[in-house]
Amino acid sequence: MTAVTQRLAQAAAWRLERLAQRLDGLRRALVVVNYHRLYHTALDTPFDEGVFGDVSLEYFRRQLQWLRQNTQVLSEDDVLRGLADPKTLPRRGVLITFDDGYRDNFQLAYPALRDHGLFALFFVPTGPLLERRLGWWDQAAFLVKKAKGRSLRLEGATYPLDTLDQRRKLIAVLHERFKTAPEAQTRGLLDDLAHDLDSEFPSAELQDAELMTFEQLGEMSRAGMAVGAHTHSHRVLATLSAEVQRRELAQGKAVLEERLGKPVRSLAYPVGRKDSFGEVTKGLAREAGYLMAFSFYSGFNRPGRMDPMDLRRSFKRKPFEAFTASILYPGRELRPMA
Image (tube, rainbow, N blue to C red):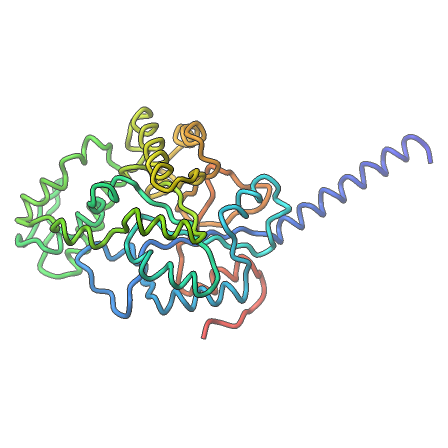
């Protein structure tokens, strides 16, 4: 074999190896599913309905059973290993995550996970748990639902409040404002709403009952559930200065590590849309010591193409198995959940 022929053969072999690696990667996918809250049999809440995602405890248990039968449910350690060496990721890997530290995570989700022998990663904002105060999304929803006023004028538009659907429309508008406006413009918004709507904030007892305690979080951690940071106050990072972002990221991590006695390696960006964080935020997260961070604008993750500081999570839950199967089993029909 001449030197030229040998080089051509080596180049061809290299191309075939690269092609094989690409094909193997295309057959692999990391799907990260996300939840916030679960309910028992009927959804009836004075707070934000959107965080429940129409997922009852019964439906969640069915989803867990489907995941056990059709995928390989991963731990936080598994995903971190996969980021370091994509070949270690299974072909159909799924990571289960929860956000915001609600008490039903401990009372409903944790026992269901334990019964199925599965683990999840829980992202917790530390400020609400320390202060026993619900986030702006729940506060805004409560104020609107309990409003005595019949309408609200906001930014030149009038929102009638005669029906529940009309109130839900205003709640959605307020949520969008909190997600996108600079923090200085929303700082006093809840107090203004309470005044203009002739409404009252939820009692301290009512708010406390909705949130996990650090003792409950510690119990889950000791049982093998992973805990990640969700900043300190759950303010949308892109609406804050770089210095405030740095404090939010560091404080959320430090409080959890002190309370749990374990390193906190993972972060979920509050809201997590493409406009909720950026390159500056990602750099600050690395600087704070996070090894991976999760967004929330849907999608899945392919080995070799994953950004550790922007791991995508899917939030399309119905039909849950059809969505997940379309990624993990392209072109195949799977038995639906009973």
